[in-house]
Structure formats: C-alpha cells, structure tokens
Length: 231
Image (cartoon, rainbow, N blue to C red; front, side, top):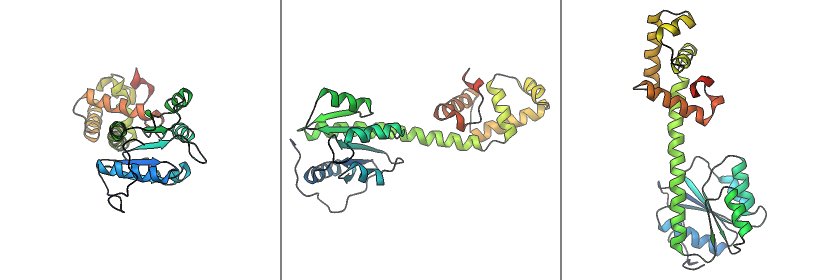
C-alpha cells in the first residue's frame, strides 16, 4: 500500500480519543497494524479486527465511528457486512478498500451503504480525508440522535391529558375550541398549555411544532402524536 508502513504502532495500548473511533477490518495482519498506526497518528482511536464476525461481536452503534473495511475477507465478505449493517439500519459510515476495483464491486458496495471505495495502493492522505468525512457524518448522526433523545424524554414527561391537548394545539385549535372538544374549561386548557410549553422547553409554537415533527421523523410509532401533526 503506497504510503502505509507496517512498522509497529507507537504504543501497544491504543490511545483513547474523544474525536471518534475508526474500526478497521482486514484479514492481513500487516495492513491492520499499518492502518491502526495511521488512524492513531491523526488523533482517532483505532479498533482493528481480522474478520466481519469478530467486528460484529464488539461493534457499538452508540459510538461516533466509521469503518475501514476490506472488500475480500475470509468468511463474510466486506460487501456482505455492509449490506447486513444496512438491513439492520445500523448506519455506520464505511470506506471500502480493495485491490480489485471492478465496477460491479464498487456499485454494489455504494448501494449497500458504503460512503466511498479506495483501490489499493492508495495514499495515507486519501484514506485520512475519507475517514474524517466519515467521522463528521457519524458525529452529525450522533448529535441528531442526542437531540431527538432529549425531545423524546421531554415528550414522555407529558401526562395523557397534556398529550391530548398538544395534539389539538398542533391541529391549530384555540384554547376555547380545545376546551369544547375535551369538555374542559378554558382556564384548565390554558394551564395544560403552560405545562406543555414548560415540559417541552418550547419558547414558541414554532419550536413546539419543530420538536414534535422531529420526533415523528425518527419513529412515529414511538410518539403519541396524531397524523394531524404532519398536515
């Protein structure tokens, strides 16, 4: 591999990094060592494995991570691993590496969810650039997941009645109309509205709508929001 050295890593213990994790899966020990050193040299944490099965045993979908994956592996191939992750909705940014750059391989890999494919030999910089792109994509997904988790927790703190009132607020009904629909006084509805805004930490109606729509986009079945929200 052009630019990659099989020299030992500078430390026998991988250094932990808050920047992100790079999983490396390749059945060539010298390539794993060289890639591990390269990843560590740019401030990321490498985790190296010799097979897809070994990787799947330890993969943590909660990590900000990307995957550098050899196409041709013993057992489950790199392409099969990419397709398995996609089927299971585990969206891990993946850079495929291969000495066999057939067009069909590239197309299948990209359709399966890989973000790029590099032909061996490749330069250190080409791989590093793609790794950082993968980490940035993973970080964006992670941040979005954290934000959605916060919205979900706030939403689940609503009482059943408050959830009902929220549905009707999002339909555009006034407090008077909501009161008529639920057989509540206007004062009671206003009290529920105040609680909803407080619990959802919403500064405006637009903010409240944005939060609910964000929640629905992640999983409508997990939210107590009616179809009217999207209309």
